[in-house]
Image 1 (cartoon, rainbow, N blue to C red):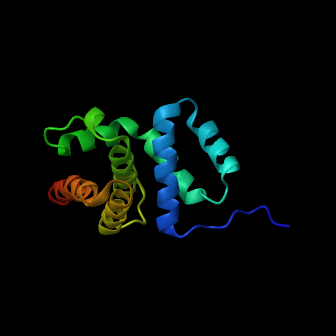
Image 2: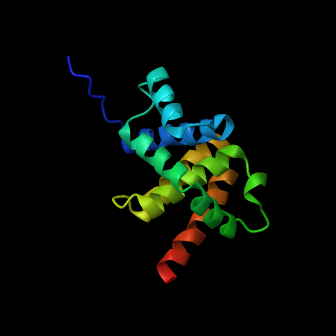
Length: 140
């Protein structure tokens, strides 16, 4: 019997990364241990890609949050809902650090996750922030 975990569709893997980033915001501690525990607790919710996004987001947390903060006009990151912040962190992580993901795909997936958890307004907010980041990266 193989112990290799199945690969989730990318949208599901991103949702898993969102759950990890969101949960870690409350728990903190050792990121690798947290991720391992979550994957053991709910193995069908996460795959290697979920873990890759999560661990990369934790590693580059300060850089990601600084960039988000620069594009959330009149909103400090601490004032955002925890879900919006987690969605933005996952998307910015993919946009900056996961080479095989095209920026429009990362943005679209993030908008869909934001809509799922925070409605149309959440999706529009995430789209605006990520669109600003994408434009800055294209021009800069």
